[in-house]
Every structure is written in C-alpha cells, then in structure tokens.
Image (tube, rainbow, N blue to C red; front, side):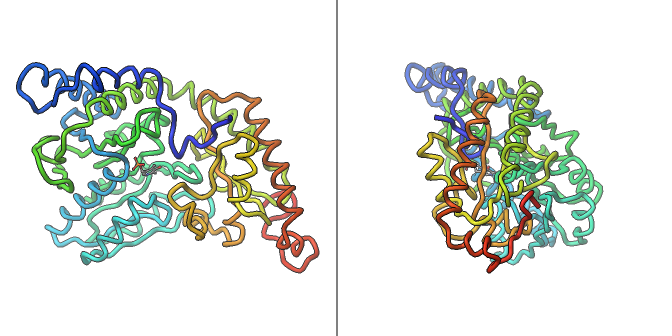
Length: 399
Ligand SMILES: *Cc1c(COP(=O)(O)O)cnc(C)c1O
C-alpha cells in the first residue's frame, strides 16, 4: 500500500507510541491527584507543555491542551470574539478557504451578531497582508487566516499578516494544523496571538490538540467542568496522548529542513509527472505550498471514481477533504480559487509522507494516468468535450 493521505491523518511515530504506552498501563494516575502517583502524570503533562512552548517560541503558560484541531479552532474564535464584543468590536476577517472548524465557528458567531468578511484567496490560493489590511475596520476584533491550507497546501504569508494585525491593534489567530511540525513556526516572529495544532497531523495520536494563547489572552472555556488547564479547559487530561503528541512534535520540529528538502523534491517530481496528463492542472501556487502537498484537477472525471480505482491499485489518496467527501458538493476550497464546479469535482489530493520514495511517486503517477484515461474513456461528459459539444476549461497542455 502507498499511503498518500498524510493531510488527513498520519501514522504515529514509534517515539510517540513509546511515549504514550506507560500512561495507558503503569502510570495511569490522574494529574489532578495530590499523591505522588498522580504527580507523575502531572509532570509528564508539564514536560509536554514545555516541549510545545520551546518549539513554538512561547512560554509553557501560553500552551493549552484540547481534544484536537477543531476544538482549538472553536475555542480560539470564541475567545477572540468575546474579547472584541466587550470593546464593542463585532467585525471579523477570515478567508473563504478555511477549514470547516473555523467556518462553522464563524457561522455561529454571525448568529451572535458578528459581521464576517471572508477574503478571496485568488487563483493561487494565497491571501496577501495588503488584502487583510484593506479589510480592517475600526470595529474589527480579530483576523483568522490559516497557516497552510489542508486541501491545496498553499502557505499563507502569516508573518506579514500578523504584522499588519499587530500594527492595527487587531488580534490574529491562525489554524496551523497543517503547518505544525512541517514548517518553522515562531509565534513571536510571526506575530501570532492564538494558534491551533492537531497532533494526528504530525505523527502524534488522534484526539489531542494544542491551543497557543498569548499571555494577555485568557481563553474562554467552551468545555465546562473541573479546573484543568488552569481553569480554561475542563476534563481529565489525555496524559498519554499529550505525552505522545509532544514526543512527535519534538521529533518533527528537529527534522523540518531535512524533511522539507526531501518531500519538496518528491512533490515536484510528482507534479511534473501528473502535469503530462492532458487537460489537467495543479491547484494552488506551485512554490508557496507545503512540501507534501500535490493537488490536481482532471477534466472529465469524478474524483470519487478516481479514488476507488487508486484504492484498487493500493494507493490511498483523497478528493476534496475527508470532511466533505461523502457529500456531493464540490470542495469549497477549489471553488474559492475559482475552479468551475464540473472541474472541482475531478480533483485529487496526494499528501506525501516522510517515508516515501521516488519509486512510490512514480507508481502514483502511472496509476493516476491509467485511471484518468480509463475513466475518460467511459465518460459521456468527456465524450462531449472531445466532440466539441462542450468547451474544455483547461488546454491540452494544462491551464
Ligand atoms: C485536520 C484539520 C483540522 C481539524 O483537526 P482535528 O484534530 O481533526 O479536529 C483543522 N484545521 C485544519 C487545517 C486541518 O487540516
């Protein structure tokens, strides 16, 4: 099997598994207990907090553990909205291609009376700091722009956007779930006030999230109960999961440059191979993208059918995102970069892993080419394109 869906989730690293196991068996104490057995768990929790702080450039007190990227995004947006509301500021700026964890939170905030400006991301899938600046109003309370997009992998100019927000006195949150452990993040240099991470996207376990909140920001509780996480997130901590998340994060952060170099070479080889398929196009900027991300549209095919054929050939990939596959709507991200609906339906996301080789990517290229040809040969829609009854969106050689 070739697993090319690392943007959906990753395998836990052996170091992460090893860090987790003791807390599932012998060290099962509750970190809130006062006896020394519980304190062992508490120490592991604080060591994990220090690891995240060190690798993000903040203090341990600014790190909170949650149940995942979605919860971190929800809590960040609710916190910043409430801070704004207290000052009478009820305007929010975000983008059209955020993860649904952000978009659905914004929907909730709209019902609470907030006004939301969703910036266009343009055909390259990138928002500029200038566009953010132009959208800031006297009543803007915060900006939320993702670090890297989960479907098309485009990396946003977060540092510049953060600088604009700082200068204009507006809070800045970034959903860094796809960037964490893969790109260098420094919350100080990047001018970030709140940031979300999810462990299962960097070889940690599922169900563990990190929320960074700058020291002047007190996170608003969205899970109510006990006084865990300094009273900001109730619920007995997932000690093993958090210890594993920290081990995975430390390991990935230490290897960012070496992983990025190897993955970028594989990514570009794969892109070159797939580009040779007629009437296809790469989605998102070719350079400002995650080293692991390849996303294509192929005219005249259905992404779901392509996935099934690739599955038969032992290749795991994705079309749209895991959250929207299962629905018939084309990806909101591909629509946001201006892909027509019929083309957006024919998309393929391949997200590479650190253990991949050139022979894997070459096998993927061959398998995709064969599958696309096969599907087109059977498609009445493709037939109409070939006979000139319908117009092509791409040229034979690409866009
Ligand atoms: C996966 C993902 C999330 C959600 O994280 P979970 O831990 O699965 O809740 C949020 N944002 C982005 C960009 C993601 O890729």
